[in-house]
Amino acid sequence: SAVISQKPSRDICQRGTSLTIQCQVDSQVTMMFWYRQQPGQSLTLIATANQGSEATYESGFVIDKFPISRPNLTFSTLTVSNLSPEDSSIYLCSAEGENTEAFFGQGTRLTVV
Amino acid sequence: GDSVTQMEGPVTLSEEAFLTINCTYTATGYPSLFWYVQYPGEGLQLLLKATKADDKGSNKGFEATYRKETTSFHLEKGSVQVSDSAVYFCALSVSGTYKYIFGTGTRLKVLA
Image (cartoon, each protein chain N blue to C red):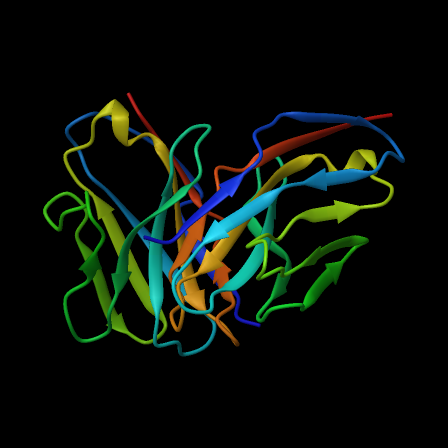
């Protein structure tokens, strides 16, 4: 099974700034995903990070707010831009495993003040 | 579109009680079904999974059976422990992809 390292594990940011979250997988994977878990809520898929092309965003999420990079088959970043208190959430990275099983990072807990 | 409906919590049980957390789904195609657990302050961990109808996933005393006729994947455990206190998420993978759709999560609290 893949091991996913995500950092930072938590951060407190000022409104109007940006935070970049890194996700490192210990093996090459084709598919990587970013999810958001708002306080007391379930996980919502933000986008699929594609290697060599732009990310594919889900309805309600846009590239200007959530730019994503995928420079190679083991690494991706998610930036949350122009932060507001509503962006306070846990952000999780996931990657494909076997038989449609996905593996998740530990998450990044973002608090915007 | 595809969706997962999960019973609302919180669920509070005494140690050694029987646990059921209901989960139903709607999906086109043939999704895989999962239960994930999130312990306080930690990330998501896969608890069990089932990839086709009538499959039973099991792990750590938890079980769930993929019931296509009732579009359900209920989580059960015969005797819960305090250490099982966590939030449990039912999820499906959109057919043929690794994109997951999650239920809203059910918080379980087990009292000694």
